[in-house]
Image (cartoon, rainbow, N blue to C red; front, side):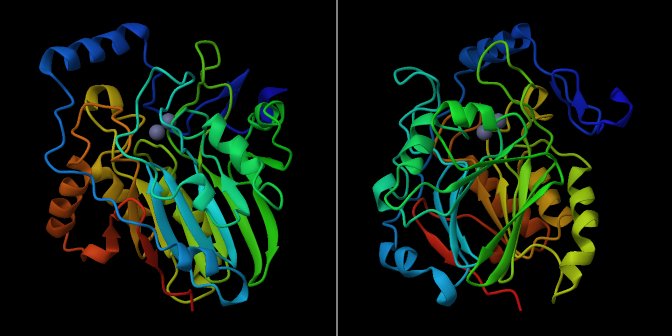
Length: 344
Ligand code: ZN
Ligand code: ZN
């Protein structure tokens, strides 16, 4: 019976494609927390996290046939991406804490770049996995109640039942490499769930029971890659290979924009198999063939031992050492929009 199932499926849950991921033991978690506490980590940021007032006029007008592809950083892994005439959100979190409880857990260092009520109508929400900093109950519930009807939520395998229990009605669940197609003002758009090296859990008894992943979004005017949370693995060259033919059909190949995590990487002995550091994010940028990448998953929640403002400094230094131009792998201020050239 198990002979035909995909290698990332296992009894009662899922596993990563490549070898070196081990779920952490309680002992390892305690050792990390104890060492961080003893060393006073994370140290406070040297500078404020850059924020800017959003261009609400642009993001609200930017839809339908006249739309220009654009990404707006809301904060953490939440990005408003406008492509294919639609507005989509990745891993929406607008809440004060990334936690099951409102009064404990990592607190936001600054408000989201756009408040929920400032968003344009959202057509599509991509949820990479069920960790609290990526799947926030209050945020998805609020989006489901937006005026004019809720967006379509695209989630990894095992999460549709959870979404339904929370009252979300329009939910599509995908396995790795499965796609869902939508018709847009610009033509057909396809969302494909792709592998990532990570894990899932919302409580103590559901570890690895629902799937995690990243997304490839193929709109006629923009190919977007969103990595979700991930360690570094061969999954990214697999993704490039899998889509090479489709992407070479139009000019230039590769993804027009990649949303890649650059924060939550220290200490490496604990984080390396589940969160990339900046050096590895730069490797993913190359592996997936991104023409441009936006560094996300930093600046809003203090989850790990590096200072909240360290990832972009590391990125600037390492990008220069590799001879990349700033616009090839950039960061934005929270609330800032970057317009992208439409795919040719
Ligand atoms: Zn995660
Ligand atoms: Zn995360």
